[in-house]
Image 1 (cartoon, rainbow, N blue to C red):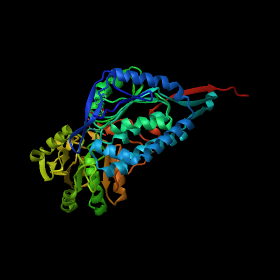
Image 2 (cartoon, helix red, strand yellow):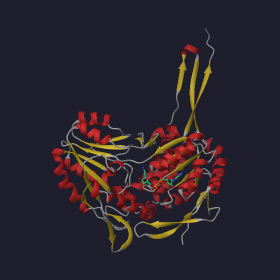
Image 3 (cartoon, rainbow, N blue to C red):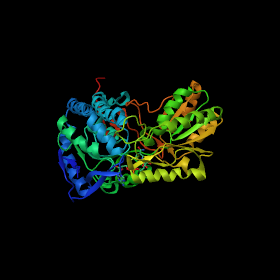
Image 4 (cartoon, protein in one colour):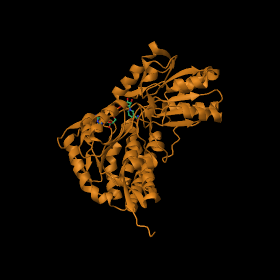
Length: 483
Ligand code: TXE
C-alpha cells in the first residue's frame, strides 16, 4: 500500500511513532493509501528544522527568494497533468476543474507572491516638529504555522505558504488529512526549485493531534488557518493567550441576491456555478439564493431544469459537472441537512445520494435545491458545504439586504442587478468581506480576502498577506539641524 511521508528538513520521513491513517478516494470509496498520523514529536522535529533554517532564509536577498518561488511556480505548472489527476482523485472533484482551477492557481500563488515580495515597501514618516524620521522595518516573524482544509487542497495550502516564505519566514505546514496527496508531492518540487532544507516542512495528520501541536507550539509565532468556524474558534482559544498572530478564514453561508433588472441569462449561468462548483464545497459558493418576486417563478422554471441536467460522476470521467463529495462522513452530513427539507421547506430537486453503477461506494450527492420561506431555519443558518442551495423570494431592496445579513456568517455575497446605484447601495450594506456584482469568484490576487462575523478574522491576499507574515518595527532617528 502506498504510504505518503512527512517532508522535514528537505527529506521525506516516516512519522516518529510509526502510526498511519487511511486515505480514501471519494469517487470509489476505496482506500488509496496511508498517510502519517503525526503528533507533537513530528511537529517538534519540523519546528527544529524550520528554526535552524530561519536565520539564513530570512537574510536571503529578496531576489533569490523570489527566484526560487518563481521556479516552484514553473515546476508546478509543468506537472499540471500529474498534479491535477492526483488532486481530482484525492478530493473527488472533476479532473477538468483541478486542471483549470486548482493546480494553475497553486502555481499562480507562488508566482504572485514571488513577484509581490519584490514590490513590498514599508513606510517612513518624517516629523519636522521633532527633527526626526521614522521608518518601519517589516521583518519576518520566524517559524509560522499554516493549516489548510480539504476543499481546494493545493490551492489553499500554497495560498498560505507562498506569502509566508516570500516574506522570509520558515514554515511548518499541515494539509487536511482528508486530502494530503498534492501537499505531499510539493516537497519534491521545493527541493528541485532550490528551496533550502528546513524552510518548508510538511507534517501530515489529524487536526486535534498534528494540527493542535502546531497551534500549541510555544515558539511558532503565527497561525494562518482556513477551515471550519468551530475549528477556528478552538484554534483562537489556544493561540490567543499565547499572543500568536492569527489569520482565520472560516466558513460561509453566502447570499446570492438576484434583482429583477439583472441580465437573466448571465445570472443563470453563473448561479449554476456559484451554487454547485466543486460540489458546493467552496467557502465562496452562494448557498442562499434570494430572488426578487417579479422574476421568482421565471427563475425557478429555468434554474431547476438546468440543475437537473448537471452530470454527476467519477473525477476522471469526461463531461461531468460534479464529482464526489470529499468523504463518507461529509456526505452523511449533507444528506442529514437535505432531510430537513421536509420540515423546513420544500425540496424542489435532488436531496438524495446517487449510487453510480460503476462506483456504488462513491460519495455522490445529487445537486439539491430547497425552497424556504424564512431565514430562521437550520438550512439558512448553518454551513452545509455541499451541493445544496436554498431559494426564497423577496420584494424590496431593503428586504433583500435584511435577509442577506440575517446569518452568523459574512464571507462573500453576490448581487445581480443592472442598476449601478443599487449595486453600490447594496454592496455597502452587506455584511461581507467580499461582494461580487454581476460576477462570481472573479479573483484578483492583489485584493484583500477574508470575512466578517463568524467567517473569520484578518485578511489574506496581496500585501495584506505579506503584512500578516511580517512584524512592523518602527525606528525613529533624530537628526541635528544646522540652525
Ligand atoms: O474542517 P476542519 P473539516 C467547513 C465545512 C466543513 C467543516 C468541517 O463546513 O463541513 O468546515 O470540515 C485542521 N487544531 N469548512 O472537518 O476540521 C484539519 O486537520 C489545529 C469550511 O475538514 O476545520 C484541517 O487541516 N488544526 C472551509 C484543517 O484544520 C486543526 C473549508 C481544517 O479542518 C484542528 C473546509 C485543531 N484542533 C471546511 N482541528 C472553508 N471555509 O474554506 C482540525 N484541524
